[in-house]
Length: 224
Image (cartoon, rainbow, N blue to C red; front, side):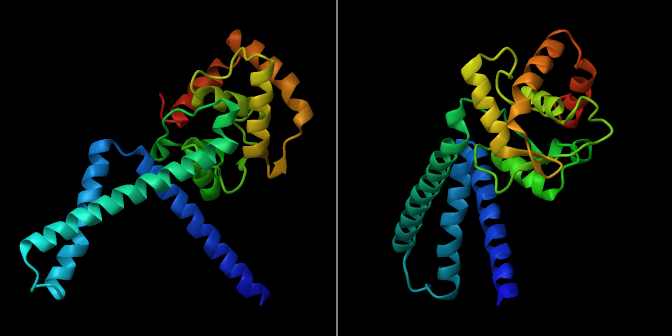
């Protein structure tokens, strides 16, 4: 029974993660793209029904069915996206930070040492959805700046407006964002190390101390 429970838990977790990724994808679509998707979703079911079961229905009845389905699809998608956005704001956006537009296909996972789970969770986080687990920052040869300063540089380059010269309240919000969503080598980050590390990182960044790291990270993020 325990193994069956574990299998069901893994399946439900994967299903939930895939559904969140679908919501991120839908949220990124433009108005025209969403309209095209709704048209396709609205046309396919009645066409299939007409091909196999509904040849006795006339054109007006089929058109009415298409319009009803389009309306229901549009309302359903809008409600689901709105619900996930509202849920995400409780954990991410209330901290006052917004991530830049993210293109997963451009990310160099090897540079950051991200596995598939990290990539999925990062995509959720940067899409303003709560990740399923903390994103693991691993000690790598290129991560010579130290895990926390490496992460601070990452956030500075991925958050709108960056994180340099933050005031006290914004620093507290940043600390909570880090603690909630990131780990170091699978371990929880020590909150006591964040304030001093941020101050040192901020001073060095202002003086060009991390320019080389920023250049290589920009390429790994697809920004270069």
